[in-house]
Image (spheres, helix red, strand yellow):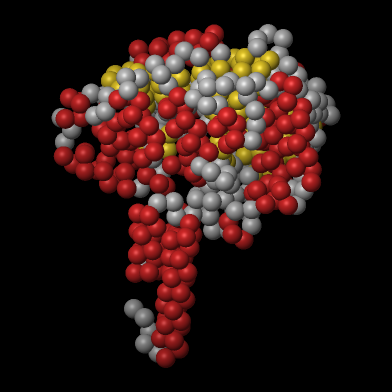
Amino acid sequence: MIDPSPTNLSLFGATVFVFVVLGIVSAVQAVMTTRTSQGAVAWAITLITWPFFAVPAYWIFGRNKFQGYVDLRRDRTSDAIENLDDVRRNLEPYAVDLGSRFGDARALEQLARMRFTRNNDTRLLVNGQATFDAIFAEIDAATTYILVQFFIIHNDSLGRQLKDRLIAQAKRGLSVYLLYDDIGSRGIPKAFVNELTAAGVHVTGMRTTRGWRNRFQINFRNHRKIVVVDGRIAFVGGHNVGDEYIGKHPRLSPWRDTHLSISGPAVLATQLAFVEDWYWATETMPAVSWEPQPSNDHDRMVFVLPSGPADDYETCGLFFTHAINSADDRIWIATPYFVPDEGVITALQLAAFRGVDVRVLIPGIPDKPWIKLAAMSYVNQVIQAGVKVYEYGDGFLHQKVVLVDGYASAIGTANFDNRSFRLNFEITVLTIDDEFTDEVEQMLSNDFANSREITRDVLAVRRWWSVAISQIARLFAPIL
């Protein structure tokens, strides 16, 4: 109960006034910046009528633009600009024009400000053991520098293996850099970081709350998983660093995930994504090489697409929409979180209407039940148009893979949800190559064989309360 003394009443009145003003100011910003008219109206009404609750929620969850990242790169360091120019110039001899293949690939090049390149090799890495065996082997073989970036790093058996290898290479005199997300890796002990630092490893969190405009915005995450060794080979995919990713989770194992390695000129585009993130976090530039090292094994066309909330456009969502629209025969999608926006849903429906084999593979065993509940409302929506949706039945499915027709495949860190489309820093690697696509097709065919289709009949027997909960969960899709 509020003490009715004049002093307390005056303080209460001042607090109410401040929140009302903040609510009005925030409502104006929401109207000016929120992506959809429905979202703008919802925020504006809530901020004005319930400012005590809505103002904190808006400044934590309401904004979808990460402030300062691009400004820092463009305005405060000529080195970053020179690096970008150097990469473009050095990659130009390896640039390839796809023409009308994969839709019009020039649209993607405009998004990334980077070209498709040839003389690359890509290697498919299925599940955690194969992935970390390959990553650790390259770290052990490094001669100059190592760049490591993960969303999650645990202080468990796998995390300590990574730590020990990085320490060993730093003590040999190599330049070693480790970047992690502060929220994803919030459980990492200070002693873990101190041990790395003491050995000479450069370590930092992404620091997404850095800058006064981001101070209260904990909703942005750096979800990228990147390893680059000597500018010669890079790794990108779904795995984080934790024992669960190598099949040691008591409930979710066997963990189903996919990574890939890249060698060739496209490594530099992957490296650039790491360098820009590192510069944001530290305002220092890693000592790296920008000389392309073409592959001697294959001549695959590869395109690297970093995306994130600092982009001018919604790069990630536009990429997936473009991929779906580019499919003539089939589009197969494997994702752990199927909470897409209306643009992606429309693209999936239109693809199914024009006779494309559209399949979506989601987990049967969810790690986050609330997201699975929300996903089921979208599943019901797309299967009405002829999209086939499957639940993976052998452990938790965490891979992020897209297969287009018989020549293109994309593997990366991005999920089919609002968080990846608008709130997370992500990276996706698109490979244009028939042989590699055949490997991805075989992998996904095995996954579908271990899955069951969610048909209309399956959805029709759901209890009313299950349908209601799914629809309620869908309301929270923008922040899941």
